Length: 172
Ligand code: S3P
Image (tube, rainbow, N blue to C red; front, side, top):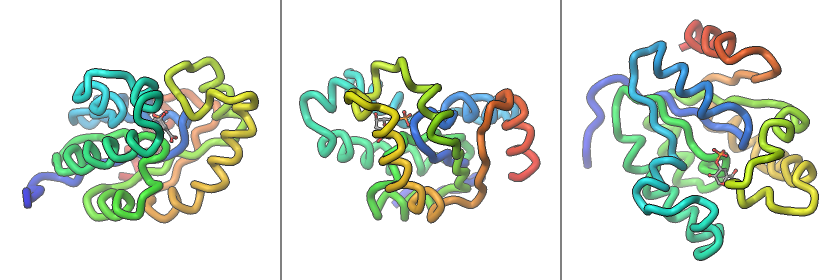
């Protein structure tokens, strides 16, 4: 097994639309760390979009790939890593996230989440008749899992990104 030597990665978890990528990127810049986004890494490595993976391999196929990429990325010390909203679903992934990272759970209300992802086409789980209800359902099921892995919890309301980042910097 590869051993981590430098500082533990900061791992951001939370629902789609919680701000993991936006806040994570900014946080990394402030800390002068490298930023990685799990979905982006997965797309770069497989050469296709997340939505295409869902289309051809289903959610199960996507989760397998996601776990593999999480295992690789989370070994890198000194990074800020944004995960996909469902990365905490598997027990094995949660263990990896807890063991290797300093974990930040970004939470938001259903309305706020919905507002931020309403027009996004690359989120296959929301391609349903009632995406708002879907978000509510997913949040309800996942909330305890996010809480389980979190070291720090931060509510991303309508405050600007730099406020969130400043707050997190004071907590880390
Ligand atoms: C998912 C969230 C997405 C992406 C995939 C599944 C989820 O990532 O991994 O569409 O299960 O919540 P974001 O949280 O970055 O949108």
